[in-house]
Length: 489
Image 1 (cartoon, one colour):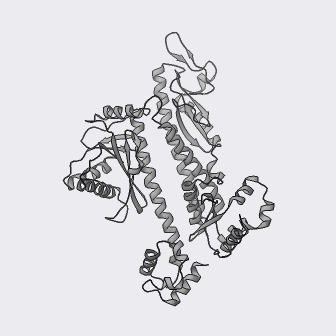
Image 2: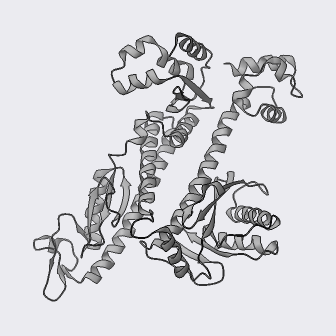
Image 3: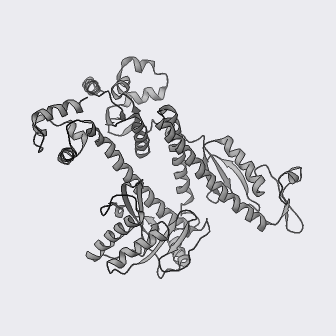
């Protein structure tokens, strides 16, 4: 960086406030390379630009990062707890190359089950290298996982990697030839069909255990943040983010529809499995996202011939009410989407997928009926057991876990879920940035909204001059000067 650039950065650091927040370090092309949080932004960020810092940093990776810093951006928040949460959101959004704690998931273990084996065993793995196997996890605690596998063996009578079953002359199998045959309290000689039933029960238990442990980690992080044990909360948050990232890659891996099936074959298979009148070449899926009723938004994703059509994705803010009501939200967004298509005389999709069960499906169907529109084929996918819910009164359907048709439905459902959650996170992030005005005394809700509406964001408001501020109705010269001093720290 040129001497002029360095002096500009130091001047920018000098103007930083002594307040909690998140900072984003950027390289020469504006790409975010590191995201960090701070209780005191000025103290924390200034350490990156001290000459002694560069000399004393022992890790080559950190030295390299400091050399690449060309600019930085900050987001002020109200508390260190908010900074902690926002930091995690931004790291997941930008995936900065130097946030190693969040991207290094090699410590997490997976459990692999290969259905091609005569008696599939439960094995530990760190990578997904086999598209034919089922994977469970990731799991953060290897010790807990090994104990769980031992529990699976006792509870369900399944095999782990150390077993060498022997096929008997009558077609049955002997699981063990040693004392374990007596220890595990299950018949040691068994048919392949009976073992398959044990296997499925153990797989369902293990999938639930992964979700249970992740929920426990999130609860621990929340308690630690509320108790102001921020280092512990950050450690737990890092583990959760890395787990979720690994799990996301697992889902993408498991739902990759290429290989033994191509996309057109899978779409045709979906038609057959759901008994649809025509091949669902164009599908649209809806999901609702909110946090306890706040920041309620919806997403719609579109697939063509079994593949994402991202240019057709849409986001919706819920307008008809404020609060927590997934059914009303689903009814609103489905009605808005297809009323507009009808008004523009554009075709409806071949299949609509709703992320949810009977209640959400009924709400979506109601949106069509209230507007006198003929609904296309419409189903729901209920998460708990991945059950297909039909809107035409047919009995719910459960497809086999490995059926490519189900994987396609899971893929479009997960796309809608992630798209909705990312929109929700953006709104929450924006709200955190704007919340700083709540601490400026003498500024009412209406004036605050007028300022944000006039300038568009807190970042632009910070750069405003007194002359520009007084152009906003109700903002006089004295208030403008106080506001400039407040925002400059």
